[in-house]
Length: 186
Image (cartoon, rainbow, N blue to C red; front, side, top):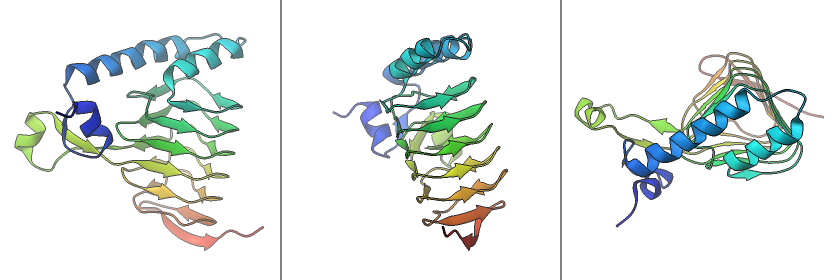
């Protein structure tokens, strides 16, 4: 029989109150509390905490506290990533962020989907869809990315945009919902 975590990560309905999932979220919250309260003059300590939290972590990662996430273990970060303050990553499914990507303050990346059916919600059932952000991207402040969206390589997403559909490579997208307004060239 499949665990609730296995169901969650594969996009099936899962019980979000499952003990294993609650324990994993609690573990992440303890690490996040320590990370978010860590002194700014000790980058080695912050890196150590991130390595305990994030599923795949490459070099040259800067995440300004506070950071919020559900599990951390479902997040994959490429090299040379900068994430400004107050970002939220609800990683019930995989969240992949490519190398050389800058993420503005208070950006929100969501993977969980709550059912429209009230009876299913009362049972705390949900499912999740992965999010992928390519390499060489820049997301302005207060960007929201909804479940199941992919953003291509070399994209710029304007501040305050809500990304509800896939964005192709080399695009500038803005608005709510975000729409591509032009292609980016060298």
